Image (tube, rainbow, N blue to C red):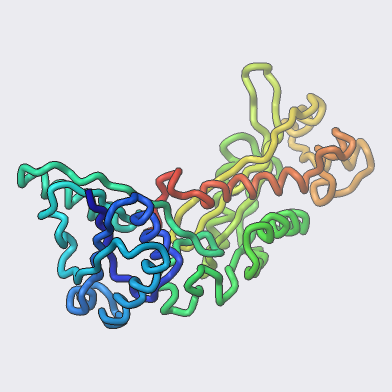
Length: 324
């Protein structure tokens, strides 16, 4: 059996390496299709010559094996309709084309090829590495950002800003976080679905021309199992591709006296100030810090919600996420 893989390989980058390595790791002879200049120019604005692109693929493959061949690719089908049996290695972006190839083979009375789809190869900003982004000067061939990842957070609370940056710096190096203050706050103490709506509104207001926008809201959620109310932080992250991911922080049971006060129109901050003399507790340790004797502070809960909202972005292949 042979393994087939194809692409333009314009501005050879880390994603191309992962694609070719996946083909090599099948243990078969690898047949590599590199799009011809004529075919590539029909779909790309700027294309390096076939000769140079082929040479770059050769240099990489020679590090691992000489059991490969490179041929010009003049259509999306290449020789995929001619081979009797083969493994076809594709990226998430070209997976739809692989499905079309198998549909054509079936219409010809041939067996479908075995498709191996590799995961996205992500850059520092958690967006896929692509030749287009490299040409634009946004990232390097290894996915590092040349320009800062612009992240907005809609909040007037310094604690949320600090907790967000504490997480972001664990996954990115070149970033810029700005505070957006043009948003609707909704209720001071939202319940249930209002919490989700207000956090989403915050994120939407802050997106503008940023790579990411973040909205965080804490709210009260009812648990019918024990007839109690829980405080939860909810984070919404929307990116420049309009993809939304969300996450919750740890929930904790709220005291009945606090819930009674909230139902009567008193916010958590107002309740704590009136009963304990602590002003704006939501900008500091939070009521969770007061209740738990600071074993769990609000900063931790905000951090958790932001971290959990970014989890689907770290392995988008598992979540079948698309970048349109």
